[in-house]
Length: 237
Figure: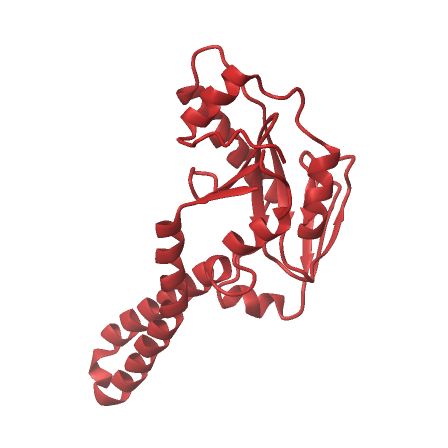
């Protein structure tokens, strides 16, 4: 499998994710000193406190995606390793962060990194984990509505293709939700789920079991790769 990544995007956000928490702590420390040195400037102290807090949250938010063993740009390719030369993974190349180019079309991958127990039943998501409230206060993204996010990302890619492919030419675009944390316990009611929701260890097996059919013709494939600004490897895998 080929990986085509926006390295500058990843590098910039990884640096911010690594450094912002420390910068935030320094700013908060300055505000603490200012309280004692200039108590008459309480308004300025409060502004500095909020700035430090926001910097720390930004660092935590980006750190969750770009830093450490569960960085999205590392975990998704790991989950797809061994898929073969006819597959190309686009990483932060489009408005949708992860798009897999398959022989029969495209699959958008909406990434969630929560640990603990995640369940979907009766149209509702639930998430339970140790110290969950504290983790979210520290900047961890809430679970939110993964299927709604998956539909939005799939729609973005579909719209992009409509604007870049020749008129009348269509390519299938499907979406799925991928939970990348190795310790996540996932329970999803498949009968009511509008999209597949998978753990990282299940992804390759699911893709091989559910290929997009029919395969793209040579003409459509060439137009698709041109629209995505890619070279077609034409490799067997």
